Image 1 (tube, helix red, strand yellow):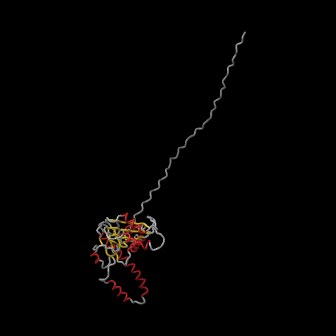
Image 2: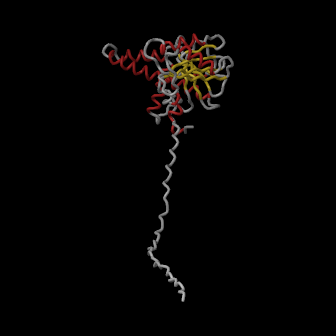
Length: 302
């Protein structure tokens, strides 16, 4: 786990205590969207407010950039006093103003859900946070958050028509024209008896259609399906999902070092052969001795 000295956690904003009093209350309803956030066991109470603060800061930063661009063009028409008055009005709590994020504690360890206001795209926000973390791993903005899984939409498993639900979410990506796209499916099924992994994959693949090839490694799009207890969600991520560590913020800030390559085996050195003394060979030729033939003397008759 990251040390305290190396982590720059998200700063708590004013007015945050109101939602702290109600954190964890409520249920995930059909039609919700947001982000599933995982953490170490026992750290859910710290992870949820950290996630809300991190998401809030990211949205405020984006809104601030847009506001700066707009205010530059309006400086001539609006005096400083009017700007201050407008900003003060924006800081006042409003009963009719809904909170953009709400943390919901789940009945499972290590997991919580952050519900998003419909004006905020969970897929885009999570992608933005992960690309920033990958580009600046030394600028840590969280300590307890691990994996973030966007939920483009949530349904209840007891009443959902999975095929129709998948068609609704996947239509902009696969059935709105354009060339074939390679895709992969990553389901996560926990504590649910109605849907199993094989059924989810088969149903989603049938919705995508045979015109789009399956490629588990070099995909153009990856379909993330989460089935937990009585809810199911679907979202779509891009080809850099694995490069971004599966949207695991802790891994992006503290990448697991790659295993060191095995040292190359040293070449076997044979001992130098001792010089051998070659005795000169002297060819000795034995003289050939011809056999002597004794003359045969025939006896003479007298």
